[in-house]
Amino acid sequence: MAREGITFEQVAAAADALVGEGVQPTIRAVRERLGTGSPNTIHRHLVAWREARPAATVTAPELPAALAAAIATEIERSAAAARAEVEARLVQTQSEAAELSAAGEALEAERDELLEQVATLTTERATLAGKAQQQAADLAEAQQRIEREQQAAENARIELATARLKIESQAERQTEQAAELERLRTALAEAQQGRIAAEQQAAVLSARLEAMTDRASRTEARVEGLERQLQQAGQELSSARVQVQAQQTALDGAVREIEAAKRQVEEARAQAKKAGEEAAELRGRLVAVQPGKG
Image (cartoon, rainbow, N blue to C red; front, side, top):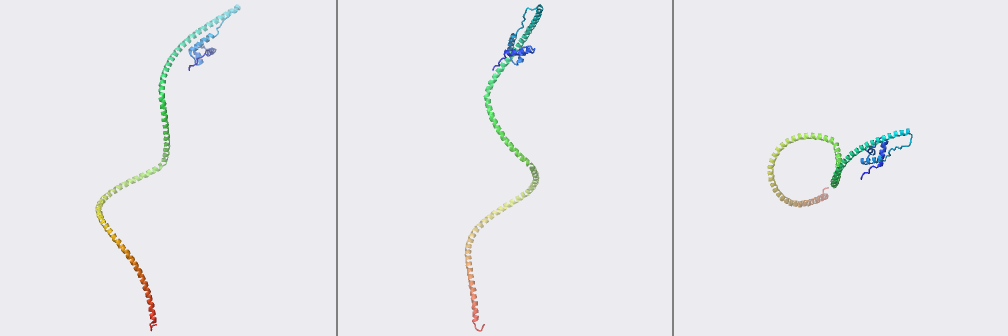
């Protein structure tokens, strides 16, 4: 959107204020007072402002000669002042023309620079427009990557908290582990001594093992012979078991017969006892009835 130019009223107000302050209203002074404005526009409005200012007029009323002479002198002074003002305006106009020329050259240089910048920016805009879509895709991918990294960071935070808990737990056990380490060192020294003794004993046992291996070989041969004998004895045992079973059956029958005989013997003893008692009783009776005995 184009910037709105300054107005005649703004330039005139600034120029009047500068004159009121005793400052010559040049293009630069007005532009500094307004804080903005094109030098060409300010120059155009300053020319209109100067032309609109009332010019000093001198009337010649019919006055006494002395007064007329004084007035003429004053008019001459005023004319001189007017000429001085015109000359000052001429100098100011020349100065303003020089300022306008310098400002025009500066503006042309600025315009050329701005045109170059516009061309550069147009090219960059076309390039950026081509990159915008790719950047949007890259941004979406970066967002997804950020989400993955955030999840990974959360997982790492949880793992770190877990690791810290483990470290704290391990720190509490360091004293115990140090004591355990010292105990293990002592046990290692003892074990090394025991290893030396064990190696010596192993050498002795190795010699013994070799001797025992030789004995075992001879014993194995004897065992094979004994196994053959045992097999033969097993066969004989099976036959003997058959005979024993038959003998056991016969023995069971004999036991039953012995039991029956025992019962018969008991019965016979009872009968014999009873018969003996009856015989004794009969003997008593017989003695009692025999004559000459009493």
